[in-house]
Length: 320
Image 1 (cartoon, rainbow, N blue to C red):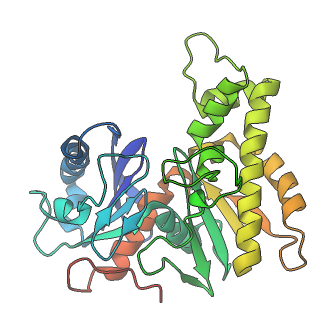
Image 2 (image 1 turned 60 degrees about the vertical axis):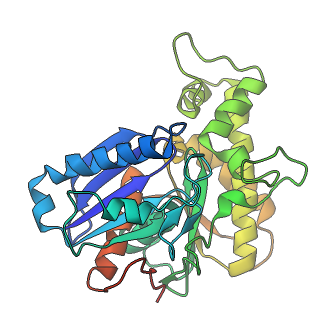
């Protein structure tokens, strides 16, 4: 049994995952993204406390942490773009110090999108592909790569971080410091922001979120449909560029925005045909993630499983 944390801009999720990759216990808290570092860590501790009340906690062999990035897997630190109070935050040290964690259990840090990639390649939509891009499209946009059949996290754990490549050189400034990033055009918050800016108004009593935009898009609202089309176009440009660079065979997309289904994937595939024009990129397949919201947790557990018997602090996930 392995424990897993999945930390994002919207929620902090925890799970117990068995050797077959099945989630057998859960806990979750909202992410206090505007709170202090201590408040944020308090939410993480609360998730761990709830997991520790599960009988399965007593037999865990490892703990994996998937976090929004950038991450520094060597230092065990995180600097999520959407969590301002955490800049170089020593998350591994803080989790290791939690009173419910057993001696000898060494937390393993991995980027959330790399975790999703590990899970989808192990059990999901990228299974059987030697070269794949997996993306999380949610509050932010992240990604991870499988190359030559192996997870490729890179030296710091951030390889494949597609959300912060630019697809619009004159685009809006991104919190990361660049302009025109994919995240600023295709994340859930970006979809809602774009819809509002174009004149869309959410139904009375409904929040202005990507999920609400999706509800109106399904009813045929032109402004809501246009917001999803713009997001799909940005994703298509980034996927085609990645395919041109490293010759992937499939792009797998998960996260909350992917739950919109055909509202996202139909225009995405159409735009991809316009961008993926070179012979070796044409025909690049796009698939929805098979593991849905559990991919980050399963991937974090997979990282812990791989390294459960490797000693030493701040271990790196060996891409081999």
